Image (cartoon, rainbow, N blue to C red; front, side, top):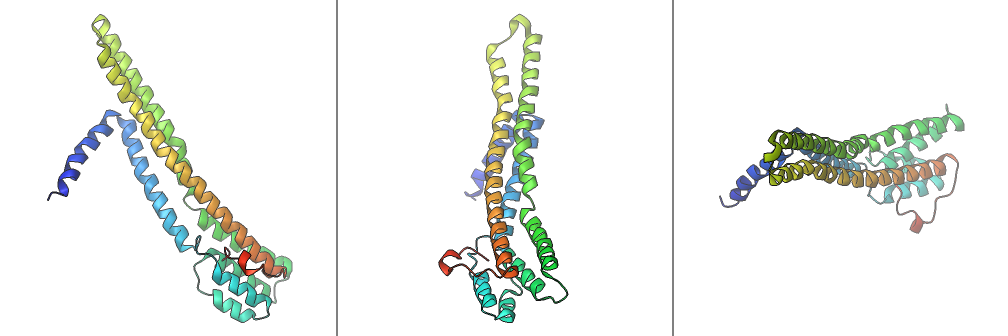
Length: 227
């Protein structure tokens, strides 16, 4: 029972704080929840794609491929959810397909790579949107709040209370701070996810080049991050 008391006490205070900023603050609150959910979803999705898996299995498959054990290499990658492994397997199948010459095999591998990278980049536009419109919503709330504050000042005339005006101004400025509080983490997460996807793309290109052009695999100590 005691554990529920802080929650029940905090909820009304939070609702009152959001209500101070008006409609714009409510929009920012909804945006913050959506951005947080999107970040958590993106982390889980990249984990399922093997973004931080280390790449040991694909490195082993590349060694098998270049030592002539091509069926074993493909079996090692079959059924894996890692994007690097899926791209490497697609490149191996294209290289083994007698109906495809090298140019056609490269085109098929590139098609699969585009599809996989599109899956890896899913959701990034949403974070970009959150980082862009968060400050704009905050600015909108501040502008409308300032308009309301100065309208009240005009109506009060000579009986205007400076304390009341100051209170209206700081309440209006809350939305600007809230908008930036949403935009900054969203932008940081977007930059981080972009770097992860770029690393995936680089490793996928490297594996495809080794498979389709017969480049020898790199030394194991340099290939710890490819799958």
